Amino acid sequence: MPFRFVHTADLHLDSPLRSLALRNVEVANLVRSATRDALVRIVDLCIEENVDALLIAGDLYDGNQTSMNTALFLAGELRRLDEACIRTFLIRGNHDAQSQVTRELTLPPSVHVFSGRSRQAHVKTLENGRPVHIHGMSFADSHAPESLLPHFHQPVPDAINIGMLHTSLSGATGHDPYAPCSIADLQRHGFDYWALGHIHQRQIHSVKPFIVMPGMPQGRDINEAGVKGVTLVTIDDDGQVALEERPISAAVFERLSIDITGLGDWRDILETVSREFARARSGLPADHLILRLALTGTTPLAWRLRRDADLLEMEVANLAAGRSGCWVEKIDILCKQGVEEAERPSADPVDELAALVESDVLPGFGFRAEVRRVAEELLQQMPPELRHLMAADEAALEEVVLNAGRAGSADVLAHLHGRAPAEELH
Image (cartoon, rainbow, N blue to C red):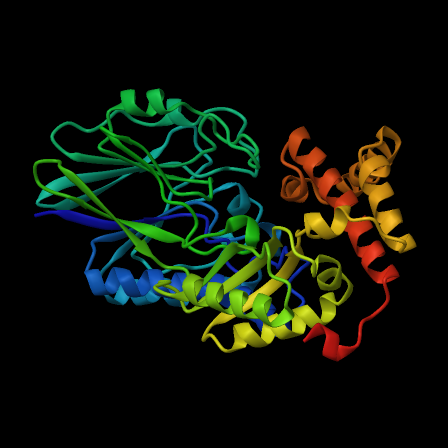
């Protein structure tokens, strides 16, 4: 009889909002409830598929922000699985280890939380035709600088062996090293399936055996973009493993770049944006699409778009509202003035200033150094765990500096032109 389970990780229930761009109250409320919606959908999937178990490979909570209200919600959802005779297996990740609620909450009897206090991973045995042994070890505290793999038992012969581990593997951009280990080490251990957690992007690292990082089931900001889901796993009596990725996220973040090169009429730009909204929304397996829009290319309206950004935001928000479940959290105006218009002789002092800024100021060492100093000061003021969102490495910081200089100078120059009459914009 096949053994079937759902593998998930990194739900970060009730995680606080991290995006400063979520100024829209409706969008903010939507994102705030999305992690709970994801757990409800996971439980629904388990019941609909009549699986044997749900495996949660760490970071169910979001650190010390966890409230008893969050814990009671979790207990209620796990109780639904208990009533459906579906077992739940949990390991604590680095965020769970920070939460006292994790230890105080009484969970249904069908829930097994693996300990992290001993120096030996625990094994839970199930009878499902062929014996199934689930091996797991939680984080004892929020830091695990050494590999936990040496503490795992060897696979039990003539049985299905599944390992649960919260790990950064050999390291990933934006993630601190936690319980590091290599794919080769996991392969050599001899388990049939490794249910991993910690890295928020889905990846199948190996198929013999299967080593799976399911990714998070719900993104929380634009840096966790794309459709998120869980992994539905079937292991037959011969030990053959089959995987299915199932979408879960109720809200999906996406970056949408629109090239408006050659468009010189405000209405044409809005019509192009509307078409791209329809394309992005079509076929999306989620209730809501939250977009970060970037306007690129060359257009004679570049300076007007920056100068009248408030009007642009209002009209774009109105376009999004016409698409069910479509929202815009931010608009990045990255387009440039048309080449011919930018290069033609002009008596306008603002145009002359713009040319000077482009040719002399922005490339200048002193200007770049000053902007970089401000960016580095801002980084130091941010919480350590969020700094990678602004700059994951030195190259990313240089890009931030460059974009900040261009965007700032473009905004100032646009406003120096003064506001055009409303009929001119349309």
